[in-house]
Length: 284
Image (tube, rainbow, N blue to C red; front, top):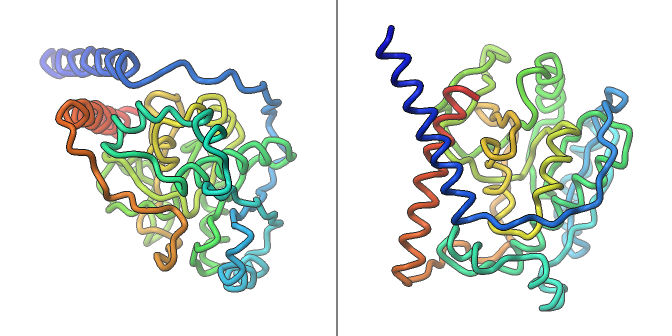
């Protein structure tokens, strides 16, 4: 019994040290974005789909699915990174910290994607809805299955603040709730990629907005920082929707720098991040 208590105390001390180290090395003061009225909302779910003007072919495939989903939906006009001036991009991105955390330069498409999700969160908080189902325009799903999953998650709304519906990870983590015979709500042990589809509450959206700028990581990595931002990040496993990996507007995310100094800092960042993910899966 005493040994278990000692182990937990040691883990807490290591976690505290990791957070302090992470903030000291990798974080800069975020912008003071205008305060938004969070409120509780009216209990409804609003769907937002993010789509570039030129992605008409994707919308033709997505729209019938949205219409059969049975929820009100609204388009978020996506921001195309290449259309932004260099000054606009430099103002919104801390390139030095991004390069350290990702071991590479930021892509224009990543900036556009990040700002588009930020725009979706801001639009959501201007509405009266309590929850937002945010989809990228290449999301693939069965409308009946997705609608049922949203209802199941709302029945367990006290167990999550943000739920990734296409986590690109296995079910390795702490099971929070069995949602059905097939699906589970899980606190993941690892960093989870992809923002193709997720359900989010107003408070979590407000938190993400508050800390969003300057951009220091891709949006899917930023959202994973629940241990720092203080909300319950969950995944549905197996995933309830998919992702068409055809034509992408993000850019090449595989290029890495050969600078040894940056690689060492990136490794430190990964170690801290992975450790905190494990702690959140265990205790969060």
